[in-house]
Length: 205
Image (cartoon, rainbow, N blue to C red; front, side, top):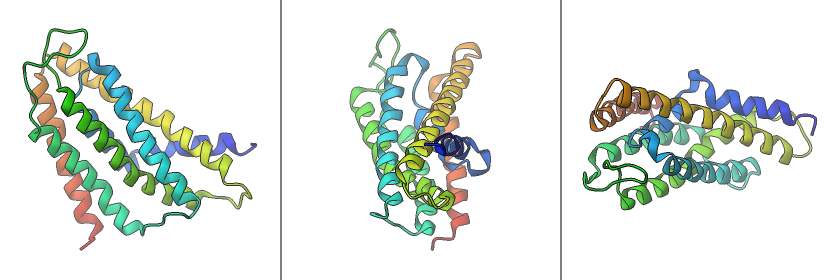
């Protein structure tokens, strides 16, 4: 257990490192359609993503599933692009109110699709985490403690990232009075543009 704090720190630094901003960009796109008042939905959404990447991180760490890093590096920005497109193109009925407010929000069916999308895309991001994790392994006889510490570090960093995203969204929509639809289109469009750039840089084809 003596290495647990070290792997906890490494996991946190990996998810919060702006040099590898693809995972952060995915979280930005994932949360773009939600308001602060929908924090319960955001918690479920992040939990679904966590379950997804935790499963594949563990499988890859134990050598059960191995996918070439070149493929994963292409698939991760693809998840960002698809999430951003879904944000803009999916129907958001104005007559649906979310709990605790009298205003419109994402529909129940839309939330369900988002949860499944976060879970499935989490599988892909978990493979990306695993490539970095395997490079960090320091010859430990047991992989369980490093894996647990690294995964928890990712979760702590991920929650802080989501908190910042939702906080910035709240300021723009409630203080600066930016319309929710405009915010969603702007953030999703920016995420899609950056995702396309990352996809081109991987030169997968």
